Image 1: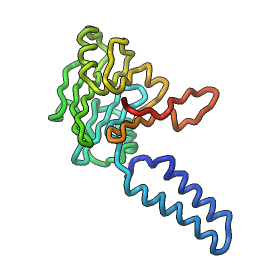
Image 2: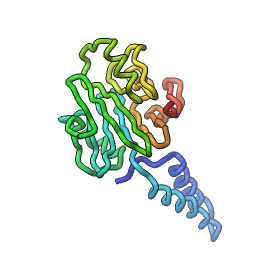
Image 3: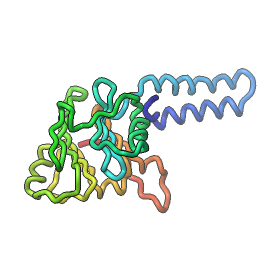
Image 4: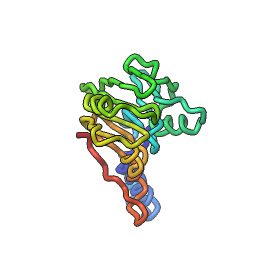
Length: 205
């Protein structure tokens, strides 16, 4: 199982396959070159650090020892299987609330991740109950990334990314690479159509 390949790797496989199909003789063997390059790029794939479902309810974090830390354990195997497939991780699903790097209450989990030589703080909501706005604003200010299934007030201003319902309805699910400071969205893969308003690739602040 591997994480989703990049657009460049996919294009390399397609270009190589078309070259092999359209040409004849020895020249067609040149089509193997982009295929080999695409295959080599697969060996360099690593799972995204954080995955967020399109509704904001499911958040998964790639663990240091091959496990997948999840905000919620769903009764449906579809959600867990989908997270495993996108992350390319076959390890166990571990509840985030029991992980040493997380502090969880009934309302939210605050997670500290040491990734790529930098410490990142995530604030993940666990329900839709009302929270005092001042307390929420203070918590957001301390966090690098905030993820919530509901709309958050403007006073919630994390340092790098606010992925609330307002953003997720436009972007779809998110795959966050903390090392590259890059966010990939489901909307990017749908294409640019009249009925779609895809979010461009974003970089974390």
